Amino acid sequence: MTAIIKKYPAIIMALLSAALFGITTPVNKFLLNGINPFLLAGLLYLGASAGLLPVILYRGELPLLLKLNRNNKIRLSGSIILGGILGPILILSGLKFSSASSVSLWLNLEMAATAVLGYLFFRDFLGIKGWSGVLLAFLSGLILSVNEGHSGFVSAILVGSACFCWGFDNHFTALIDGISAVQSTFIKGIFAGTVNAAAGYFLSDQSVSAGFIIYALMLGSVSYGISIVLYIISAQKLGAIRSQVLFSSAPFFGVFFSMVFLSEKISHLQIVSFSLFAVSIALMLFEKHEHYHQHEEVEHTHFHRHDDMHHDHYHHVKVTSHEHMHKHKIAEHTHPHLPDMHHRHNH
Image (cartoon, rainbow, N blue to C red; front, top):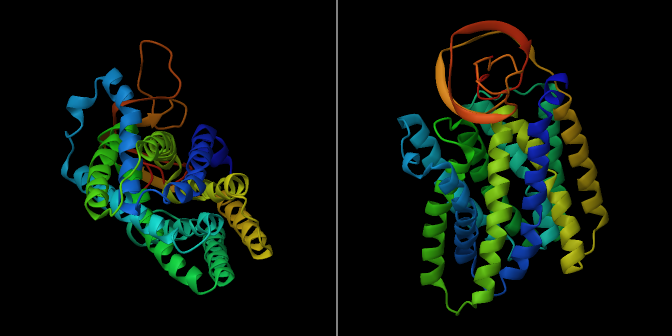
């Protein structure tokens, strides 16, 4: 827990990201009355890129967007296809078959998917407490599917598939180290938004009002654009699994907004699900990991501080948390650590 507390800026970013994303479920439920799922997914991502464009232009990062090595290109492509195209389509389709509040809770299956994929493919370490938290998250998803009846199982399959897409996406984005989080999100929004919006336009059998389009773009700029940037920065510091644990607070915000805007009531089973998720989050956050390890030489860019035992390079002016390209020399040491961008070793 000590290692996590020292990285409190990343924790705050993950929670704020969750809050911004939590409002999408009830608002999407409203927008789906006038826009098909493909078009809405596209508009949300195009809105994300539109919202980040002023930052890109201010930083002068536009010419550098495609200067990536092979590994980063693969990660970014996987993030766009799985997280930017397939994931949103599946989740928005799931909303057609179930209540917004239940879909908000099912989204916590993304945490389980991220944990399993992290263990199998991305060297993201979990101990006994962590896996216990994953199990509780999975059980709470099963409880909710029973609560919704037959239509709930259809929605659960769609949302569950989206969660696995986003599980891969979470790990891909946490490991992209050739461009900034803003650049990564901007590129993802452009490609994913264009593909989904084009498909939605050609498949649509009804006209879409300008008001719905504007609302979708505005929602995307905040709940997708800013939210994704904050999540990426957090995942690069805490690891994808632990950031996803914190991001799992999004359904709490989603259910709250569903109550406020859609007048949806909370069932007893949903309350049980809340409790299980709360315990799972506590278990994973209190897990501690420490051992002797070696770091290879690497040059990359990401959000960092100079008091974390890994970033001791010099600046002419005093800085705190910031982002730029920097180089690490070979190092061997032991300290409590998380599976961030510097600790993806084998166990």
